[in-house]
Image (cartoon, rainbow, N blue to C red; front, top):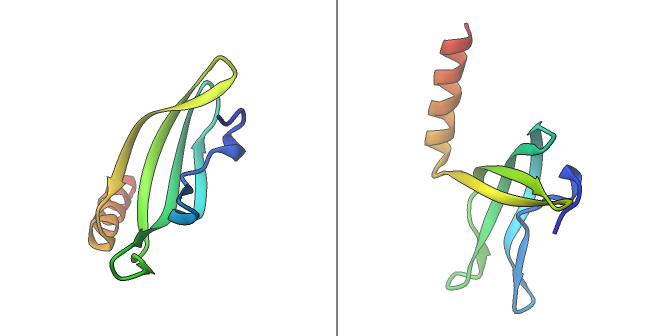
Length: 93
């Protein structure tokens, strides 16, 4: 378990294969509750290649000295990510 926000990762390995490869992350908030955005790829066992880039927003709560995931939202496609950006930019203008 991660004790600091910097240690949080979504990288996941199974049978010696990195099935979730974290490409980047950004910390949106720190503290007892932390929010991070990750850029990642999934391993496609059938094709033996990594997927296109994907994105996920994760919320963590620090309990007993370690962060535990509380919720997540997976952005399903590049088009969805671009639409979210467009909406947020409109709201912030």
